[in-house]
Length: 134
Image (cartoon, rainbow, N blue to C red; front, top):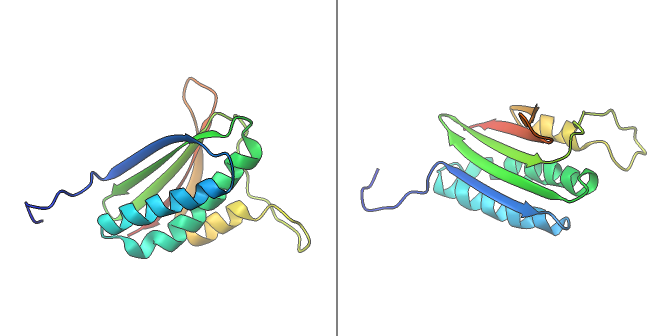
């Protein structure tokens, strides 16, 4: 590493209210920027698609639309977490050919290496996460 260059820390965290689908555009831009700085630009497309789907779930299912997004560059992988205050745990559905909804988590599963849900200890809420191998 070049000692003269200030590298970003291997994590990013943001608390915000996702008022509309436009919020995902801003988060994708942040994801692309950090992945470029972490020398993982090849993960921008799958990470952007997956985080967009998780934010769409916040907008649709969380009454106050408050959430957190965390990006964690770990040894050999990227972990992205989207947390919210809803106690409802998302589940992958089998959407029919004419269904308007129900494909989001299937897409997250398709473009990531792993994903899951963790309940917030001692408080209402959960974190939906995914990982991509670098």
